[in-house]
Image 1 (cartoon, helix red, strand yellow):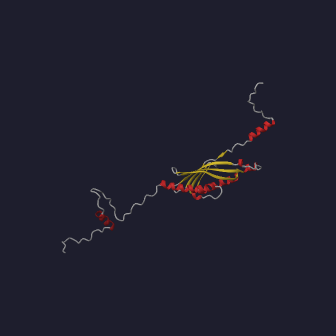
Image 2: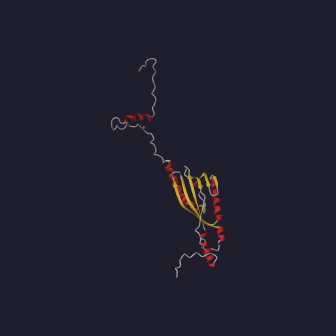
Image 3: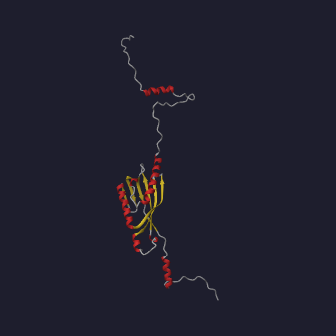
Length: 232
């Protein structure tokens, strides 16, 4: 074939990617329209479908709260009896101790603070136990709140009342309230411990015994007789 002067043989046109060709082909080979005027969204072959929606932040925090709830339910009753699992806490955990009026930050200082609390407890009580009265979850602020009680026999009371067989009245109880704050990883980032309030033991009948002894010895005035005597 003779070409006119000044004309060169053109080479092949620009090559199209296979994905582009398939996408163009799908414009004409798609499913038929269900009714006139309907629009069918264009979808290129091989395009990745959107993955299922991942759990929201609130759902993941609820799962973290549920896991931490079970772990604290097992760890808190034996807090003073055996080694505590410190993997529950973040490396920058903050400890606000209202009992000793101290505040620490960091897991190392937290371990030292709990060790100090255990040392003081074992040197104040001859025997004691920790009771978890209530443990609740609060998803609205990502916290777990624990109300617990420490029941023990003080050493000085044991020495002063060693002759008593029934030592039930010598026991002292202390109530406390702990709030554990979780971070986005599900670890405890803050532990706030409120002050302990000693519970008063039931009153003993010591006063009645003293009054009875004084009346028997004639040192106390007897109660007036309110019965009126009839005239003879």
